[in-house]
Amino acid sequence: MIESLLVANRGEIARRIIRTAKRLGIRAIAVYSEADVDLPFVVEADEAVLIGPPNPAQSYRNTEAILAAAKSTGAQAIHPGYGFLSENAEFARTVEASGLIWVGPGADAITAMGDKINARNLMAAAGVPVAPGTTDPAADLAAAVTAAAEIGYPVMVKAAAGGGGMGMGVAVDEAALRTEYDKVRAFAERMFGDGSVLIERYFPRVRHVEVQILGLADGRVVALGERECSVQRRNQKLVEESPSPAVSPELRSRLLAAAVRAGEAVGYRNAGTVECLLDPATGEFFFLEMNTRLQVEHPVTEYVYGIDLVEEQMRVASGLAPTFDPDALTPRGHAIEMRINAEDPKRFLPGPGVIRTWVEPTGAGIRVDSGYTDGNTVTPFYDSLLAKLIVTGATRDEVLERAKTAVAAFQIEGPKNNVPFFAELLTNDEFLSGAYDTGIVSRMR
Image 1 (cartoon, one colour):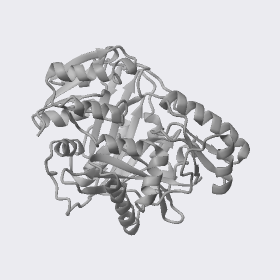
Image 2 (cartoon, helix red, strand yellow; image 1 turned 30 degrees about the vertical axis):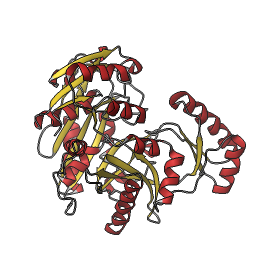
Image 3 (cartoon, helix red, strand yellow; image 1 turned 60 degrees about the horizontal axis):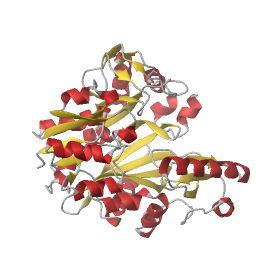
Image 4 (tube, one colour; image 1 turned 90 degrees about the horizontal axis):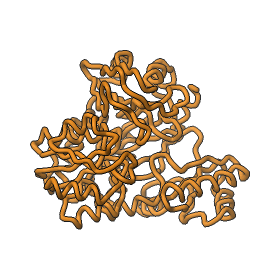
């Protein structure tokens, strides 16, 4: 097993990785920016190294500074968490070329799945269902218009190199397509350095369902159930639950088998997620993208399958067998995760500030993965995620009742936060019924 681990991330995910590392007797090393000096993950690490100013390009995306920290502390491995450099194939290659262990999928898999068009084509060749769409980038507006006419409106205009719900727009007709194409292309060039755009069929009433996969050290790929991720704002998730209320045993079998094929098609190792769109009316699902990293919402899978995914990641990276029997995976119970963000609960606009009060809920079936505590400052430099409230139980109904109590008990004063949104959601008939889709938040607003 790895003996020392540098966590190339911050906030709740750094703290969560550090927790597992220390439980396993692994020396945990944090890196931090000047803005994060007082955050819990810095204090809780066995060793912490300042790597730069608040700007992520000068700190958490600074490859040279991170590798220098690894060298100075004698780190044996690097875990990238999610975001920042986690899906940067060049960083993964550089880490391994430096003689360090990369706790994540291979650089080739990251590259293969990083381009949405390439990923779509690979998945189609592997027999994974994909939505009607372009097999090559729409080189210009004329090509986009032609493709949309063939696919049929409405269409989704997507940045081929995008991810995390960014670089996407919906066009209901040609006039809208002309606007969205230019907008997405410009955004993609600015954010990803790649203006390639794909056109894909858009499904107005659809659910977002994903499958957790794990590529084992012996070459096998296993699927650890599905997660429902349809409660979203601006194409970004707010709530995840497992199992999905929309997935029958028969559909689950097909969905998990497709996800395993997806992983096998790229020789996948370590943790990853195959994201799909599900048409609840027909039971059809289509490959959306593969996230070649640990997901924010991994705790719901951990509960349902009774494993620690971060530990499994480190075992794979160490060349060790998993702690579980891959041939006897048995899910149990239900779990829901709510992303507690520093944002206005109505318009979801960021709301940084100093935390004056921070009281986390406790009790049976309640887990909080937090990145902050009393007195910390939520700065505008990073993602607005403050914590993840995970509620578990034997049934979905039990979890929903516990969630209401937990949300009511979560006290945050100082920065704006979306806790009131979750209180509202947990009284919403559509959500409570389980028959919701990706439009639920817009209908609430």
